[in-house]
Image (cartoon, rainbow, N blue to C red; front, side):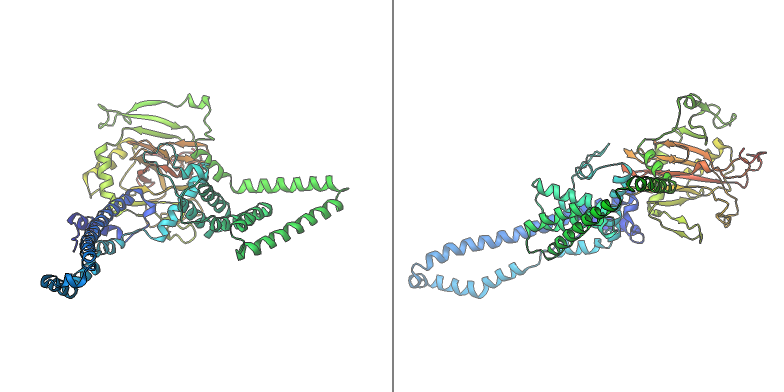
Amino acid sequence: FRMELPCWCLLLLSCLESLSANNDFFTSIGQMTDLLYTEKDLVTSLKDYIRAEENKLEQVKRWADRLDSLTSTATQDPEGFLGHPVNAFKLMKRLNTEWGNLESLVLSDTTDGFISNLTIQRKYFPTEEDQTGAAKALLRLQDTYNLDANTISTGDLPGVKHKNRMTVEDCYELGKVAYAEADYYHTELWMAQALRQLEEGEESPLDKVTILDYLSYAIYQQGDLKRALEYTKKLLQLDPEHQRANGNQKYFEFQLEKQEKQDETAEKETQQQDREKRDTTQKKKKKQSQKSFSLIPERKKYEMLCRGEGVRMTSRRQSRLFCRYYDNKHNPRFVLAPVKQQDEWDRPYIVRYIDIISEAEMEKIKQLAKPRLRRATISNPVTGVLETAPYRISKSAWLTAYEDPVVEKINQRIEDLTGLEMDTAEELQVANYGVGGQYEPHFDFGRKDEPDAFKELGTGNRIATWLFYMSDVSAGGATVFPDVGASVGPQKGTAVFWYNLFASGEGDYSTRHAACPVLVGNKWVSNKWIHERGQEWRRPCGLSENE
């Protein structure tokens, strides 16, 4: 029995060849969709293999049933049975030929089609890096959106269409990824979730002993000796001979006893100075708290804005934001059909254009970009070298105006609406975000400490940013400006625009922005970075630095 590879499988493989040179599947949901078709083909191949095995077993079963009946009759009167010459002949024939044929049938390999298909497609499978990247994305989403482990495990996320639960093994795998990164906080959360699901009766090849081993150690690493000892004792109730747990129990008990003695001694020695020490400690904690806040305020503000918290827009300022029909000073292309423009923020001034790109144009842009998507990079501020970074999880491609009339048409539209020269702008960049895809706070323009940021382009600094949203996102994925508390949600078919530089050419540091992690959905954007050269008469210099 042999299985032929279906012709559509071969077509699929030819499509996947474009992905073989650049894996990083977890950084682009758009490219991950191809993996679903790969898996579907493998399931079809696997079912063919199962049918072949079932057919073979059915033949063996019929043979066994027939001979069982025959030998039962024959062994009741062997001599009488073999006295019939036909029976004697058939016995010789069966043992000499037919049993050999049965042996060949049993030994026949029905796996050829499935194994060859699997071998071919394995070249296009995600790597360990992809699996780890997707796991880290879940941990990142958990932190950014304040989600507990059970909410993620049950798949109960906002806007989901295809709810799916995580198994004990899935939770355990997340805990192991965190453990490998010495992230004992998340190790505890996910090992505890795995243990909870086991205790609720979920069947799993994993046992409580293995999970408790990780859990107790993670808790110990966070400094909670008492709870670490409790979980270690639970482990020893299940496996009294567990060597590491026995050693840990003695160590934890010793450390706890030592800690208690130290606390008692310290309390006796400092009774008279207790108030003074408490004041000193409070001052120290206050200093540490202030220092910590000065180091990470932006991160907290960024995550709050991603959750829809901390937006700093007063009702008075809100009342000064308007929407309008806009033709950019009677531009001929928009006099008869002005576009819808609405103010999103006042300082920095951010505007959104509604229904500014059609469905057909968006699909064409995605179609052109998808085969060329590569892991998005950042410019190293020290070396200037382009490199990947864990804080930018997406894939991007660049489209030039001469590749397709749609790209040229879009570039012209941006020029007509902004009044800025596009000849010196960068090519249209198309980006698709991956699992938990994000781009942490950054500037689009080059700062004074980066004098050579765009030197090779010879077009000056990035004066402005135009950003198309080419998909709706069920949850997450907002563009936020932490310094000013602004949040702009992705809305398919719209675009937002802001100036990165003041008219004086100085950078507007309030435009520092970020792309929040995509919680649920598939986020596609395209952007145009517009440069200074060519804008001298279109946006004249201001008289003051911040004008």
